Image 1 (cartoon, one colour):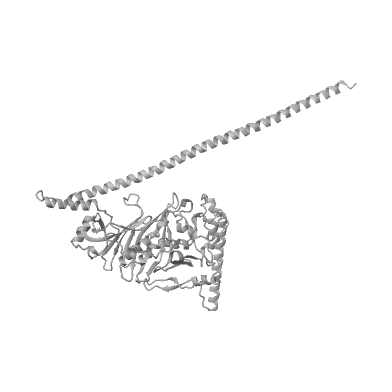
Image 2 (cartoon, rainbow, N blue to C red):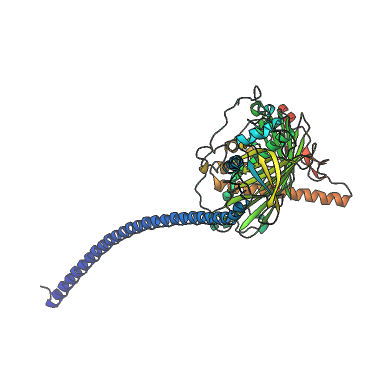
Length: 591
């Protein structure tokens, strides 16, 4: 029999062990319970957060819609206020200028009322252009036109009323298209992959800049659209049929109207295109061969990198040739960016020899720092026919919040070599342009700025150009037009330097933006290395006393223009012959 003390100790140990076991089981149960409670609390919190998030998103969307509605209301009120003020200022003038009618002259009263109704009901007024002779346009009614033609009244153009066709301002030769339009022989693509919904944040830019020199920091493709500047320059040809029609005109003044409409149409694709095109690499080219479909061939080449300059040449079997060299200058002015294309555009018609020259206006990108980006075009274009000395003055009115005019307004006057006006042009650069033939002019009263205005009486305006509607789903395809969708479509037989073969641009079009950024950085570093080699070769040649030619463009060379007196790049030939031979051995390796 064990001692009593030993038995008590053993019993105490068993008791302590049971207590510890129970405590351990309690801890385990508590842990399981707390885990379950924690998971339940997390689920409740997530559900509550999602509910509140949806509620806040709905509230935010409502506030945005209210803000947009308020902005539109304020803009409408401002325009109405401006219109009422202008109407109030002009009311006394109209009252004082109303002719008094003698009570005994019933015949005269009928004539005056008839004339007044003709001018009041069928008259359109246009504001005078700034920095140019001020004018007012009055559209004559049919009865007025008939009376003037019966009385052989001559207009400001110095010709009889019977000299033009009142049913159509353009001569039949301009409108004759029989047997000259070719049907497209190839089905072009009508869509590209949708633009990825990548938000542009600071980190997306900075992650590509870490550890790099400032001069070597690449701009991400997030700011770009999948086209190069050479392809954007080629987009000027979207309304090439205007030039085909102009080539058939017998009247140089009618031809001038169509050339002016063509110069305006090149801006129609920019209204929604706020992304920048890819900067072409030195020696990069782009061809657009539409010879079988539309009768023309176009070639662009990047001929200089600092400053960036591109040369462009187009020849058409339908009677015209166009060439230009464009250098882009830009200035950042805080809230907006001004883009100023430098260089002249030349257009020559083969049959008449008419040679037109003009320059582009300034493009302004607003809300660079804060807000939604939008683009405006402003400035003046002077188109000169260097053979006949006829001119067209176009004015692109800048957007004004308080203006009563339609946004993006363009007005113009076509005049002969003596300065006599023959046509009034009006419209907007994002929609359409119209022309109205002048039949009479007179000096009117002084305007609000004290300048004497010329009153032009015209025939009813005729449509010169109308913008094509954008393709379906264009808002998800960078707002590309039907032509723009085809510009980067792969084609066989193009030069090894063609923009279609540029890898970073192709990756961006496919939606692989991270890979596009890496490839863009590789191409830019390769271009910098080539420039360093040329600089080293120039230094060695200088040390050895040899002449060094420097970089020479492949398809264009510099010549002095006999019309403008400027030295610019013009096409020297050979490209299309090389394409026929399928020989691109002379092309540099830039990709």
